[in-house]
Amino acid sequence: MNRLTELRKAAGLTQEEVAEKSGLTVRTIQRLESGSSVPRAYTLRKLGEALGMAPEMLTVPSAPASVTPNTAAAENTDDSLEWLNLSCFSYLVLPFFHILIPLHLLKKHKTAAGKKIVRGQIYWMILLHSSMLLTLAYNLFRKHFFHHSDGQISYLLVAGVMYLLNGIRLVRDHVRIMSGKSRAHSPVL
Image (cartoon, rainbow, N blue to C red; front, side):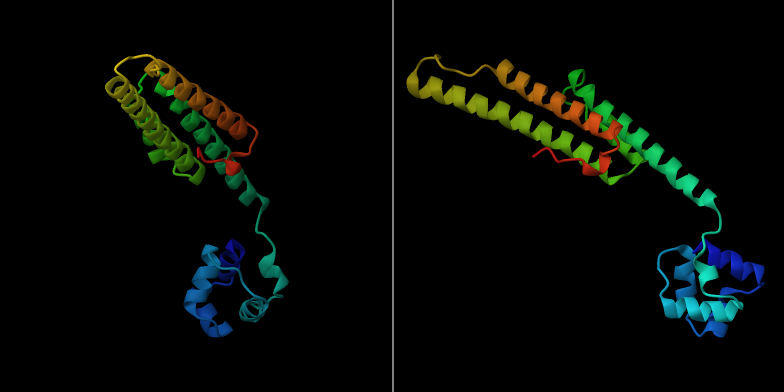
């Protein structure tokens, strides 16, 4: 309701004065001006009476320029999501510390989709280490109880499959971000 703020200031009234004239509380006026509340018909009618205009005048947007910052913010969010997702490919170079780069980028641009991307990398690290430990346990079990090393699972095979799955997931997420479907980011599991 930036329009309400502009009209109130143009009339030379304070929030308290508008509240007195309209019979609304000052807190209601503050909520409407900050945009955290949507006015009902009764509220619009009372504000219109207090400001001396039709209630419909209060709902008209003040300028189309208010759309531009939202569009710029959305583009900035998509760019930051793109960089955040691409930074997750650092797992190829820094296997155990790759999560630090996306976490640093997430501090700058906190978004729900960004948090899901970082959470997915944390889950991937947990799954990678769990699968490596399970492979170790399986191989030790085979060696201890069957006294031979036939049928053991290669650690490189397990790590390679996990790395490949993470790479596929990151590429899929990157395609979704580029196509504007970042809101539909799916979790790892």
